[in-house]
Length: 427
Ligand code: B12
Image 1: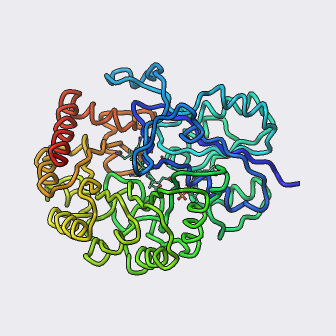
Image 2: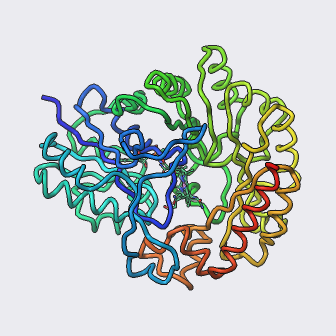
Image 3: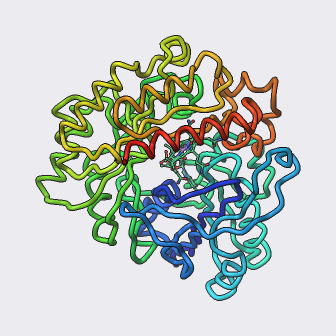
């Protein structure tokens, strides 16, 4: 008999959350490797399609999550923003467990380290309704805060990229070539895809180099199969989750996009996890637009050369300007080209954020402020230990640190300014 496995993507407890093509891709990738040897059922708290009260999506499939106000946790009470629970109601999961249980295993997706309260809630509910199920945690929080995650009471915490401990725990063998288990939804509007793992840069605020080591492409055939599966399941919008999508494009992204054109796969592609402007050439820009890439998010962070060099030198201002020129010439819609800039970075003084925002605006594209989140084990995160106790993951919250670093008024002023700059573009 095949084991019965429950897959859960937990609710989110945070000040803000928005469906920016958020999908439990890690969870589905792991499940896919057991596609033929286990029976899976998925409960995704964050699936807006199974929410009868969901607000409508925008033209690229993004949209707000259902939410309700909840008290802020003790360590975040000094942040003057409302804390909320996002996702389907808890009672719905309880009823689901009563009807669908028992389960042999429950795999739970963990994502942002500061989202662990949702994971805790799911563990509690499974323990109550299905005490026989063995609970397994994996994903970003399980890796970055494995000690903390072990304290939540799961039976196994997969604390690295190697899945062998999972297969040994289950006494099963996996098929690494399988695509992610997207069919578990029984119909989709949006999906995610990753062509590569890791990043060749060593940005001081990012955990990716430490967790993934070297940059490595994934098997290209599996990526095409995954995209076809997504489209077959109904996905119209697919977001790349790569950390360095454009690195070595000649051998990775270019052949992938050529294949999309050759097979005539019609889908809108998005890059919410940011592109490195340095690698955008005129030819690549044309190919991306032609193959269906609709939104372009460029990781910029700051126009200050001193700040750029001090954090790893991933991109310089003239490279951003050049990339924007190529993208617009290729036919990208300027309102769908956005440069991210970090706000609340510990070295904010050198960042000259306001000047940087005006520089981005002068290129005729949108800017988006990305709140700095201190991540343990990264140089910039570790530098924040003098302000915050990183051993409590709730304090890694992206809304919290910029307010603590710059003050509520200043954060609001900069965010208002960003909104005004963006508005003046569309007029
Ligand atoms: C895609 C992505 C996003 C997406 C959303 C993803 C989502 N579903 O929520 C977007 C673009 C919206 C996003 C936003 C942000 N992100 Co982000 N994001 C990522 C990224 C690139 C991938 C995360 C992911 O889906 N991984 C799952 C899959 C794809 O990974 P995988 O390698 O296949 O997984 C392996 C294992 O982890 C394991 N596994 C994975 N899941 C599971 C589940 C189980 C049960 C098991 C057993 C195993 C397992 O199996 C795989 C095989 O080895 C990571 C970086 C990275 N490379 O991990 C950052 C990362 C998670 N993000 C990060 C940050 C900082 C942010 C932002 C705060 C940035 C900002 N300032 O705005 C925001 C926060 C959004 C919010 N509302 O709070 C940080 C983490 C911060 C933290 N404290 O946790 C990361 C690590 C990047 C970094 N800079 O260091 N992000």
